Length: 153
Image (cartoon, rainbow, N blue to C red; front, side, top):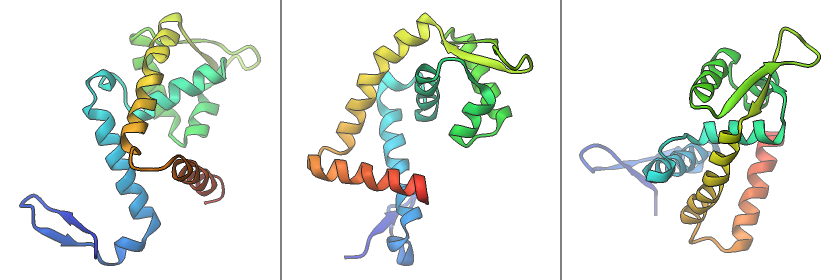
């Protein structure tokens, strides 16, 4: 049976070739995951992208904004604004880079570490909610394929 989407009047929309386009299906899956994430009251203080940035800062203490922007595929100016908001919330601090005086080294604050410690299990819970009809083998295979696509795509 052909997949359909729904428009604002709940009429079925034929997807046609979109049914077999990996990029389109990935975008739909990402949208579903992000919408589920946003529904969780306990996760409404952070977006999935911001969560990823905080985890990368935690795992790479002292990372420069330039390296973090490159690793995340976002513009440095956009990242700068996000880091500003993290600083305002007391989650991240900028320190002078040990080698490059023009750069800042990013570090989680104690509040940032505590925030992540609280949120990480909830993010895993959200993933489990979204994949509760998958077997463990299917989850592992999905992750393997997504990592392969990200690495070589």
